[in-house]
Image (tube, rainbow, N blue to C red; front, side, top):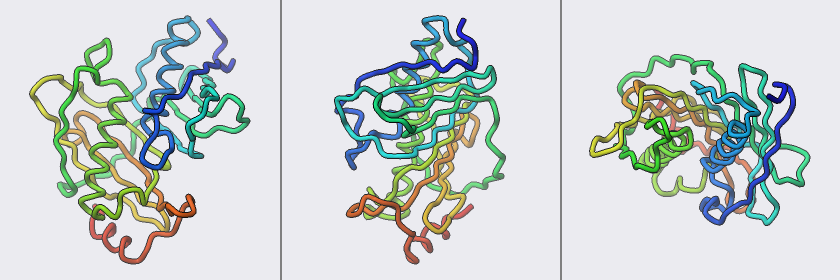
Length: 238
């Protein structure tokens, strides 16, 4: 067994399907990179196969399609698995995934927000029959996009990028005809960013908190939220 403080490195190739509409690696794909590296190290006997309660991903820089492999550097201190993701030639991380057991703070949310019915696919499930971490991030993204479009209109599409997502596991997801109600609520509005919290079955099946940052499509940089969009978002605050 490798010592907990010894970094483990795994390289994997990128795919065209990894990209989003902005030409960046999709935020869910980073979780796939992290989970793939974790699975390899568990299979090699270098990591314990612990089920984390919460997975947090910080998106630091956009990753573009390249023939350069993606490198995932993993460090496990016995309580937290931290994985830094970047091109193999880079010296600084483009994203950081942390697997841990700390619960997300209770926000005491009411019944407000935009709802969306999720249907679980067979491919969303892992060997244990429950949704994988990658699937939970995908569920959160799907519900969040629908809610943002409903609130901000189609003009909101592409005007925001994800800076951070925290996903907390809850009860198991079931494959079949049963749907899961996801409810997304704006819980914070700042100068250039806002937070959307998504509850799966009112939190019984988990929760996701996502920080979205205003994005200028022309300059490909962050931007300050306009007065009108701030007003729309603040009207949704819970």
